[in-house]
Length: 225
Image 1 (tube, rainbow, N blue to C red):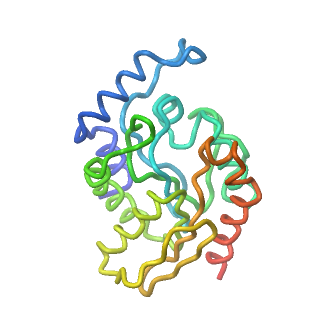
Image 2 (tube, rainbow, N blue to C red):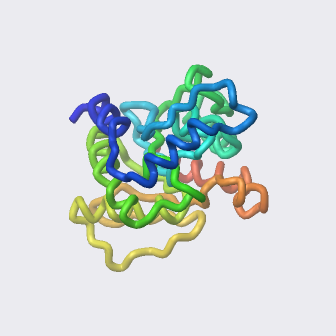
């Protein structure tokens, strides 16, 4: 499938009733600050450079971020935190991600997620993660130049290993998730692990701007070889 076809398939997905109901409810109720906006309220496909060598893999759309704007890591505090690091390392043309028409362009990077609908409390069920895995398979298959994956959080890190298992890559021994880990299993693109830039992690200092920029710098070094 072409990347455009994959994206259309993702946004039309109705596989997970709980997630679809939650996204629709959020889009109707809205947050007071966005009460005059029309929420996207549908599954969210990835975005970025079709010739990307870096895949940035996140958890899921934010209820009032991507579920509102229709673009992953757009419209909330996590978005600007991530884009600041990507801009500093040459993967983005600007350090902010506010809405779909803000002029943001990614270079050599593509952003996607393990789950495509905003989950309640940011916690998708194992079944919902499994239902969405087909989307990740098809999306990455349509990005033939990928050379490295940057996994934002443990769920994304686990998603990387499921994807590699599909390709026949041995999972034994499998590295445990930790920030800053770089793992290069034979026959697979290396993965760089980072804490997710959620407010919980950034507000507490568990993930700092320097830490995230360093993770992207490591990915850049792998790409440049």
